[in-house]
Image (cartoon, rainbow, N blue to C red; front, side):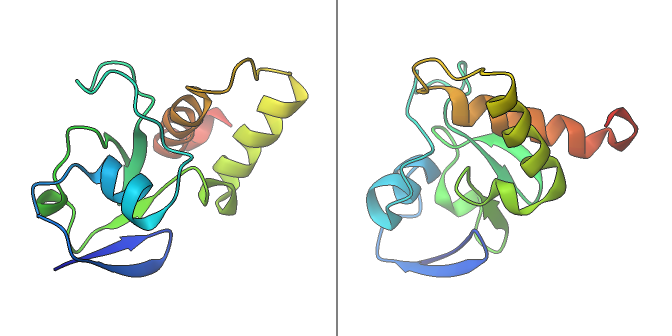
Length: 119
């Protein structure tokens, strides 16, 4: 049994602790905004925040995130930088196919959160 704090809610999962965070989020919990891309931590489509820091969820095992806070694209708009990035994404008509957009937004928000003077 693994307890995960995802988007402010504790989820009790009956899964192996070596399962990648991505599959727990998508297949077990049901938050499908985080995408599978390359599976090798290269493309960033699977980016989520772990205690505010961006991680590649496709290669991060659940055992590495227990006791920490995971934020996915579904909840990123609740923080000021997340709302600003999502609003800018829409205003600038960035969206194309949308597949990798969540990872790009999560990475952009992490950058802004780490460099408050830039926005």
